[in-house]
Length: 160
Picture 1 (tube, rainbow, N blue to C red):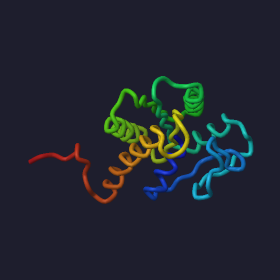
Picture 2: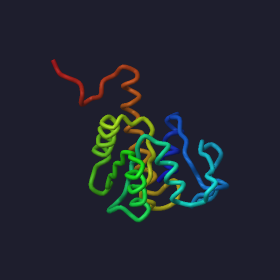
Picture 3: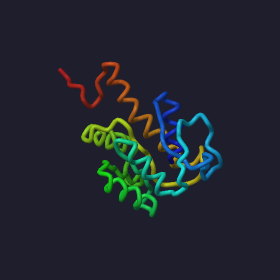
């Protein structure tokens, strides 16, 4: 899930950063150097979560179903550090609705830097959550980029 967010950022040429385990270890092996992440000295899962949450303006947790133990820890850490958190159950929402929900949340909380985390349904490219996360981030950032170039969002246009 987090790898998908990093890959989406690279694909869209969006600055990214974050924290990873020592020696850049992940569930799928060693994280390549193309990812702009720093190694955490303390190998604790919760310490890595805490640093990623604190260093972002807000956290989006994408799940299929209810919050898992790790996602509950994310919620607890976000609450403890007064960071906005948005939990989206992807099983209950379309991609378009999810993108709109995230955009609205970003606007309401003045979010620029997001930590994306959530369900793990396999490793690397080709699994369902990976592909969905890429599509969501592309959708969220697509409109943001249009705003910077002076275009209006489709739902904000008025007819004469």
